Image 1: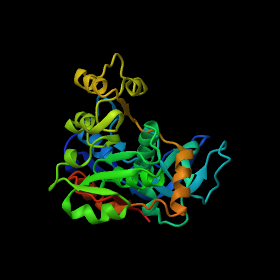
Image 2: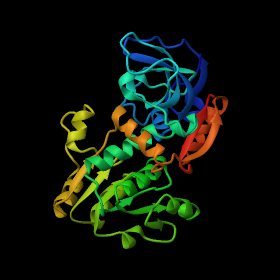
Image 3: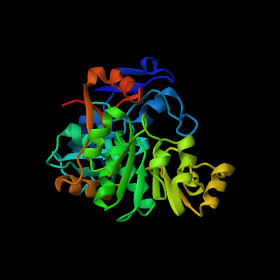
Length: 327
């Protein structure tokens, strides 16, 4: 079968190669999926560039990709909850990374049936972004009437988080650039902040929660705009001590500056290292079928153009998700 593989760490044009490899073998609790579409995520190209090699070491060469939508063509002897021919979607576990390929094996307890109302390409856009947003916002206890700032509302995670926060009845602020203001507003945002024209810290303040998708200085600035006793939920800042243990980082301590920020506001700080979750995927399916959530797709590339697709994703200009179609 054909697969897009990371062969070395470095620039994407050098590290990514389309290769012919052996079809993966099936274990008793796994399904073999004929891939119809795979969504690309920033973690993919960061792995290829070597930025995460200390945290997530890879045994190169390795097939890239975590998001998938496709058809079950084989199943292990212990799989009882899915049948051959089922349309499914998933964010595969790290150890099963490799969705930008013609076939991939996936643990049956991490997949869900694809929403009937959307295409394979649209379905592949949902798992990583959706699970990340749900887990980060649920960890922070998002509830009705909470005032929340979601950074980067035009991105894959941000665009899902906006829609999910509105299903909870939250009051949503988001940041984006001028060209994306109208369509981000159409997702349900109550106040869109054009960061090219406005200082977000002057518009959004005394918030219940900030969803930090950007990291760096934005993580620390979040504490300046939350209320006393507010919350910051991050997927890009320093890990919390709890999450560091989950990630296998021993002896980790929060940066002193971050600890001071937390204490000054009597705040809560959360960090999410997203995990595959079939129950949450099933909840996403229900929200899609009910029209509460819609997948946001920017561009669809052919498998042959998948390296170009990753190069475009790495520019940071994507509006929603970038998809590789193998249909």
